[in-house]
Length: 202
Image (tube, rainbow, N blue to C red; front, side, top):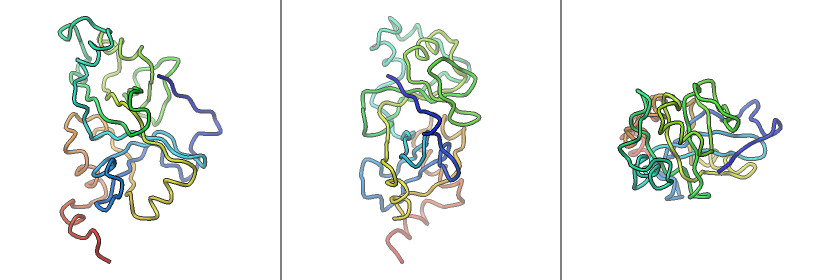
């Protein structure tokens, strides 16, 4: 696992880094239907983010056991506010590659700050830290990521594929994955029932 970006790749004016992409009901790509994506990188060269509301069919505890980070699920000790770390399907690209989105109170050589409150670490060290109870206060694990080439995301937004808004930290780290879509729409003052009823109408 590994990620890094140069200064030239960092988002500038108009960047959606630290924002949500909220799929519109008419989203053509079924992989992103009713998804909430947290954007970690966005520049003229493209964009990268993670779906944060679609669960993997296994738990964080079983993942740590599978990776031999702990010998038994009962040995896992998480921080007070991180008793349950969700494991999400981050996107269709490199589905076996793991990343941890977490609160900014954890830092390592491979940690990349995304916003004032959220950082990204793609190495096994953070999983070991979480298992020992010395990791970040709050975290979610994502496998795979969502990527867009230069101009692709902008075109999808222009085609009404996505709504955008500044991300909410509580929604990012909420263990209630099924509620994230409606909560994200709520940030824009949108009632999901109204949005669905209006989809497809001029």
